Figure 1 (cartoon, rainbow, N blue to C red):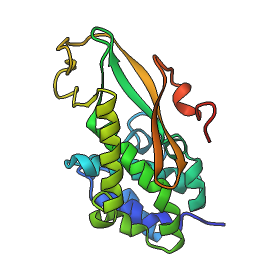
Figure 2 (cartoon, rainbow, N blue to C red; figure 1 turned 90 degrees about the vertical axis):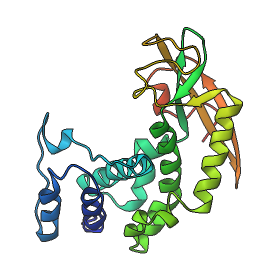
Figure 3 (cartoon, rainbow, N blue to C red; figure 1 turned 30 degrees about the vertical axis):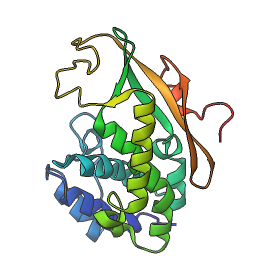
Figure 4 (tube, rainbow, N blue to C red; figure 1 turned 45 degrees about the vertical axis):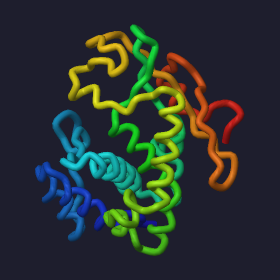
Length: 222
């Protein structure tokens, strides 16, 4: 079965909205049965879209990754829940400064968790009803009330755990807590535990977690 056709229009849209038009013609060619080029370094497989708006960047870069994986592997929309970035969306990666032992996270990473939660809950339904282009309507996605509520809830959990949302890249890798530049850091694993409808708990799971920790569901959770 060919599942690819349903992803062509949203793929083209996500590329049209991005700032780098280098690969736009390749995506437009999908309308007439064309193929996306493969390759290694410097190829389309080594590229990702970029957006000036920070919210759109988090949402559309993740959407591009979802669409590309489903398209490339000819997967049905329901398989989106098995993609790593969605399956482990509740595994929260937080940076901790070893100089002051306090934590922070880049705002684009924070917003990515909001976007992935939305895609988990809505992508399949939109695909089944042929409404994937609705993913580009702000009022239905990153500006809708449920999204705002989840964003607000998660922000409050960060505040309660003294995790600062902070653009350390543009601030030359200076810790927002102690001011140390280019200090040593570790990544800690936090987890959003879903306990029922609209009932969530934000948990610290492991200090100095490794990459494998972020790609598995913490013990005792599903």
